[in-house]
Amino acid sequence: MIRMCVCIIGIPMLMSGCGFQQYFAKPLEPQAISSKLKNKSIGNEAFIQYLVLNGYSRDQIPFKHWGVDELTYCALFFHPSLDVARAQWRAAVANQASASEKPIPSVSTRYARSNNVNQDVSPWLFEFGIDIPFETANKRDIRIENANHLSEVAKLEIAQRAWILRNMVAQALHAYQLNEKQLAAISNEYAIKKEIVDIFQKRLDLGAATIVDLSNAKLQLQSTTAEQNALLQKRFLLHADLASHIGLPLEVVKAMPLMQAEEFAPILADSRSETEEIALLNRLDIRIALERYATAEAKIKLEIANQYPNIVFSPAYIYEFGSRLWSLGFSGLLTVLNKNKLAIAEAQQLREVEAAQFEALQNTVIAEVNTAFANVIQTTLVAEEQKRLHTLQKNNTMRVKSRLSAGEADRLEMTYAKLEETLSEKNVTNADFELRRALIALENVRQVPLNKRPLHIDPLRFDDRNPHS
Image 1 (tube, rainbow, N blue to C red):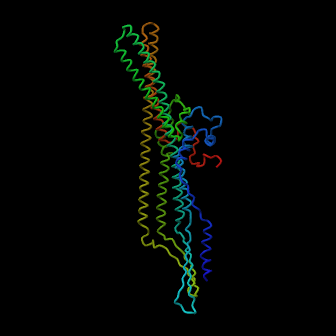
Image 2: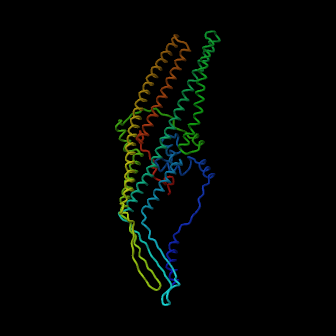
């Protein structure tokens, strides 16, 4: 009898033990991780294959110039924040698998011996039972639905993080390009002001100018020198900012030939209402909010389903002091008494919260579109006005040059005319880059590139770093 009991109890345990997983420690190694981050390189073969998979040919690599698209692929490949988002998505996928599991039956046994029985009655008692749970009201399907929505949220958050990186890269490259343009302009301005100082110095030596005139010219030259030094120092910070956004070491980014600003003619192909529609339909935070609302809906479905109790069937075999007994029982929570009213009410309130948040988000998006669109229009007008003034100043310089040739103007007047033209050109550059900044902001509101070129960014391909996986 004892042997039979041991077999009945032990065999299931041995069978289940064959599938047990072992724990393996995986400690973090800060030094190894730090070394890995410092050794990232754009010459990495895996990165080159990643670029090829996204539409570039090997003949284009290495790039002669790194623009927004190329730097964005750098960020998608190297930036660690996407690894975090991918890990969170994998956790959501694991939750999908857990949600689809059915309830597991449980086994119970009891073994006993009595010392107070008659001689003709067996002193042994043994009981073996199985509890088989059954879910009602489609609870498993509802859990799967909820897990699917949460997984979609995690997937969209990867895409959202990818877009945020792209926008940050665009802003950082824009700031670098502006700084380079300003350095070129300030260098020209410095040369002209130095020429003015030399003219006043010669006039002072000849008694044709005062020391005050020379001092004023020198002060203006010192101001330009200070501005030039500030721009040179800022270049280092801009490189560091760009490096942080694309996830590469600073020395690597400093060696990359970044694309310089190009002339462009901004054309708003879409009206404000069309831009608003694009934003409301395409923005990732809108799509995430819709998935969260669907999750709240699934929560209500589950709580309503929980009104109906799950049932547990419990067949059992009992050997009791020589008698053999069979039994079949069932059990379930008496949820019909309160019909899960409080949990249902709470889930309904959570759905109302998600609905209110979605409406508030849509209102925010519309306000952002209006602000961004108005800013683009305003900066476009300013840029056009600065270009008009610059054209007038160029014409004035040509007139002074003609007068100089005719002997009606001197060298100092001509130099000041060139300085005014240079300052006017600097105003055009600043206005132009303010317009570019406004366009980047509008693009970020839409979350669709304004150039409408297909950018082969697929942040949902979680193994896109390894083309062989």
